[in-house]
Image (cartoon, rainbow, N blue to C red; front, side, top):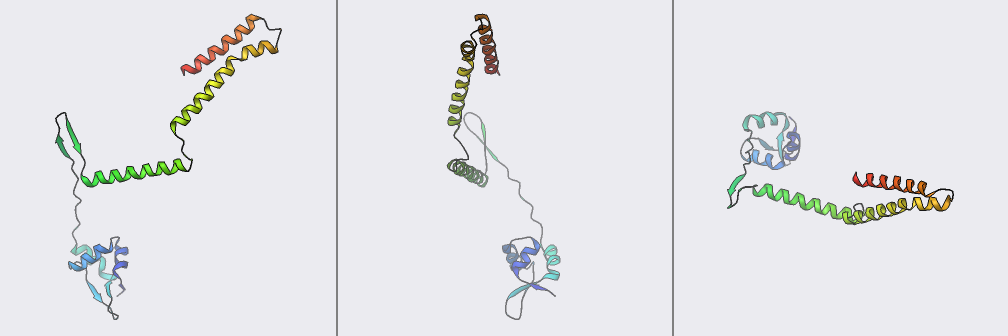
Length: 162
């Protein structure tokens, strides 16, 4: 006969120690005192005794109550579910704030401003290519420069439409 503590019994059966205390109190599990006066449980008979004397509890399905307002029908979650969801959202906000402070997140407006600057600079440089080509290649006639300018503008229009 192997004697184990209530905590060990809870771990072995996969339940909380409070569940073991309640089972002993309700007579569903037999506990004895050892030579030193500590309360212990016989591990050989524990699981059989637990399963025979305990009825499995059915989990009650949570139903949302529906309330009528003046405009429409609205569903309100149960208090516990609502509180859990609120706590989860608060934790997510705190995580985002932490990441922002660690500079692993960047504000959206900052990213938009940076990209607008990059795109504007790229557009201006591309539009200046035909003028620079004319300066560096004096043999280019005006029709060739105009053709280069048209090609660049067409490419920029295609990119802006995408």
